[in-house]
Length: 56
Ligand SMILES: [Zn+2]
Image (cartoon, rainbow, N blue to C red; front, side):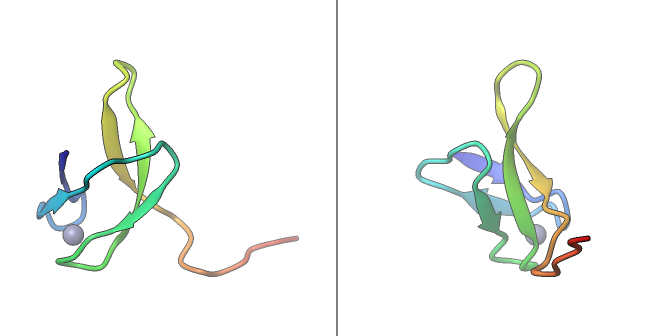
């Protein structure tokens, strides 16, 4: 499976992906979460957390 990095537009290849999994872009190092769009296709979204715990 091939994806485009939403940060740097680089190509990311993954053998298999699971919804909710975090991948990191080999080009820019962005943390990308596997999500599904309305049609059920996998897409990558930038993961918000970078190890910071914003707990209350
Ligand atoms: Zn990238």
